[in-house]
Length: 345
Image 1 (tube, rainbow, N blue to C red):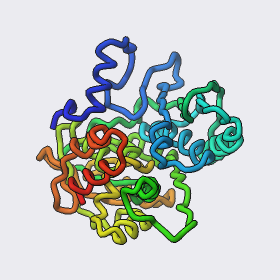
Image 2: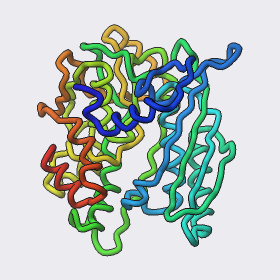
Image 3: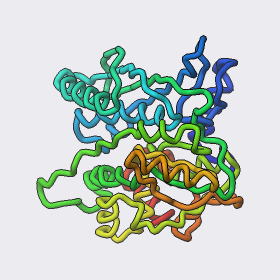
C-alpha cells in the first residue's frame, strides 16, 4: 500500500516539493493531524492546523449557517485533539457571498458555541467576499513533547479503538444526495434532517497522549482514516467488531432503509470527528483504567495486522479507490453514490 496511490497524498507531496518546511518541525508530511514545532523555553510544542469548510457547503452536506460555523471550528479543533494538544484558540477567515451579511450572525453563533464546548476562544481573523460561502479556521494549541500523538507508531498486534460510534455524517450526506436525486428522500414532506454537529474529542485526545501508539481523527470517514494509517505505518487493519455495534444508530437505520451495508456509512466522505487510535496490548489495561476514571468508554474495533490490507467485517476494502472516488465523480453526487455502492455496498 503506497501513499501516492491516493490523490490527496499526491497533491500534498507536490506542494511540499516546492514549499519550504521548517527544519525543527517534529512531524514529517502526513505524519500528524496537526503540525508540531518546538517553542523556546519549556512551554512545549506548538500544534497548529488549518481547515476550510467549502466543499461540504457546496455539496449541501451542511444545510444551515450555524452548523457551518460549528463544524468549521470543530474540524480544526479535532486535529488538535488528535495530537493530544490543549487548545489556545482559533483564527477564522470567512468568505461571504453577495448578500452574505444575513448569514454572519448564525455563523458567529455556531463558531462561538463550538469554542465554548471545546473550552477555547476565537483569537481573530478576516472577512472577505467571494462567489460562495467558505470558512477557514486555523487552530493553535500546546502539546507536551513527550506525549504528542502522531499517525505513525502502531505495530501488528496493537488493538484499534474509536472514541465513539462512527458514520454519523452519512445522514447529512444522504440528505444532500436525496436533494440531488441520487437517493430516495429520507423522510416525509417537510421532515427536517437533524443538523450534524459533532464534537472534537479534546479531553479524550489529552487522555490518550503518551498512551496511544498512533492516532488520527475520522473527519474523512473511518475507511479513509484506517487506510491512511495503514499506508503510513506499512501495516493493515482488521475491523472485527460487528458493524451494528460501531455504526451510529441514525446512520445504521438509514443504511437498512436503503438496503445498503452499514459499511457505506463508514466509507462515505462526510466523516465525523471521532478519534481512531491504536494501543499496544500490554497497555490496554491502562487505557481501560484511565478511560473508566474519566467516564469514557473506548469502542474496540479490531487489531493492527502485518498484512497490508484493510479488512472490515470480513471484507477487503480498497481504501485508495474509496478515497479517490470523490475526485473521480467530479462533484456529481449521483456518480459518487453509484461508485461508492459499487465499491462497498
